[in-house]
Length: 335
Ligand code: SD4
Image (tube, rainbow, N blue to C red; front, top):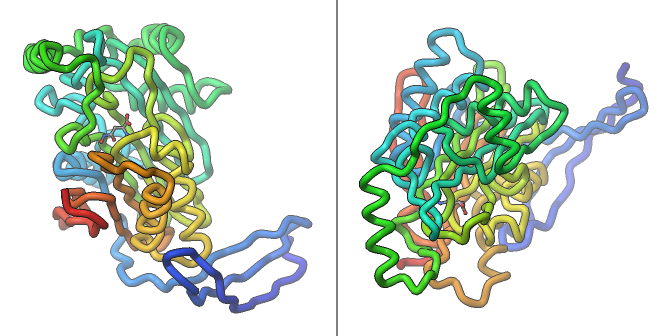
């Protein structure tokens, strides 16, 4: 029961964004203060809307929209969307066909989250083509948020997922060539950044998101990046919006990237401003940014979207029920 309500306007300092005028209302519901961001006003409220990272997001969006048109929920849609990338053997940074770690093992990370902060994740999972579907099962059928490694695989097999050889001939050849000159350094460059993060909002404003990857190519065996970590690779707060990350996971984890983007939106930043501020925070924390690409994507609870990256080249696909197009994100640096 709502007991009192007060409205106020305040000026919030947002670091590089500067002072932004935002409006907030607070309600006290059964003794708990609920803050609702009421600005910035929506500029594009064509819902439902799906956004996803990189050019493979285009066909992933099409799958997500198909799912919605067939009566699926927004959570069903983001799961179906990123599965499209996971199952594409040509995509060498997600699921089947992903580039292996330095010892030749394809190890996968994924997570999924809904409007009500329910979430599930798998990390260091091998032999399963669609880790996002396993992450969803973790969310819906266990009391946990994340299963990892052997335990995640056992859980997947127990739930009817089949073991698959994820190392395609093309990725095996690439790994063998890398071994000749690599000196066992993981490769961090623009070609290896293709994780898919997808954020969606339905016509009633409910949010969902998914993130899935084979991680950095030729990483150390056992390495887990940001993509399965709620708050780093993906974060949703149904009162505010959603965010996901792509790029060098270690840098994203260091600032709790996606959670920060959502919190910046809660403080009044637009999706693009929030992504830009998070990217800038990463840049401030690293002396050497050589090859360190990171991009964030955000969607607020009204359906406004935006992205930002350290280096040029980060793009994302944006779809509504009747439109799907690529958008180039703004960035700080040329390569
Ligand atoms: C990782 N963030 O494992 C992932 C890799 C990635 O675009 O996003 N590449 O660190």
